[in-house]
Image (cartoon, rainbow, N blue to C red; front, top):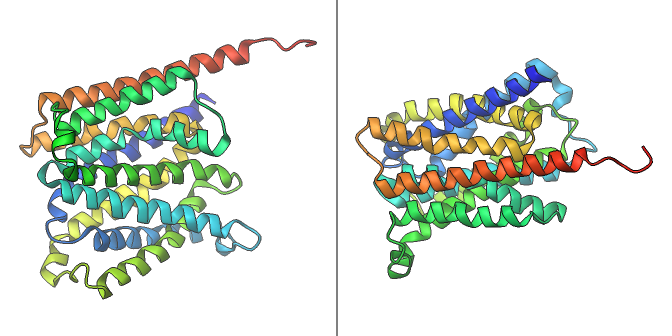
Amino acid sequence: MKASYSKGVMCCLIATLSWGATFPLMTSALTHVDPYTFTTLRYGFAGIALAVTLLMREGKQSFRLCGERAGLAWLLGSAAFVGFGFFVFLGQQMAGKDGALTASIMMATMPMLGILVNWLIHRIAPPAFSVALILISFLGVITVVTKGHYGSLFESPASYKANALIIFGALCWVIYTVGAACFPEWSPLRYTTLTTCLGMTSVLVLNAIIYLAGLVAVPSVNDLLFIVPHVLYTAIIASFIGILCWNTGNKILMPVNGVLFMDVVPVTAFTLSALTGLMPGPAEIAGACITGAALVVNNLCLRYRLSRITAIPVCGR
């Protein structure tokens, strides 16, 4: 059991470290291509690698979906790879040079979003302390977004469209993570592979519509050559390895514990951004600490509450 728990911790840590490095990396990539094209390339190559791995590990029968929830798998894959890939990086692009820091902080809201999603799906209302900590968590996020100038929320609300897109993308990823519980018989590799491949059908169709409608221009050859290193990292490290580790870790730890590791994302992003000369300000650091503290306290309170409930003796036993 201890070894299994350690494996879950290590898997979630590998995933979030790889994702934390993605946001600073995307700062330069998004100056050359749109987030839709990048998402298609990133998850397209990752999907191919995952499909080959699944074929070698579990055989052809693992791709058969007869009698299985194929529609739900497609929906979850679409939520993850369209919802997260399109909206988070579109929001980062719209946020400009500070987009990497802002987007990474938004990822730290996932544990609280997970509580809300669990509330809606399972009709289990969170305890009062969780509701209070949710509000504190979002206070930290608002502190980062406004850089401590809370009044600016009302002065230029249009500029926060990017932040709304990022939070929506984060919510999509939470739904994808929680949705894995609907496939208890699937291995993490199978869940990751099939949802990626099914979700890519939505990515390709929507990307084609965007091109045909003229909403974005088809990238030039030079632009595509520029983003080759970015695609290789995000496809192999952040997607193939990262998402597989994430689903493996959450299967072991359960999402309520696994998503706590999303706190590693802003720490990694802040560190790498600082190394490239983009230093977070005092308000951004304070906001990150507020959000992180709320997440940790909530998790500890939930663990204590669960231990108290399981320790209560049952009458007649």
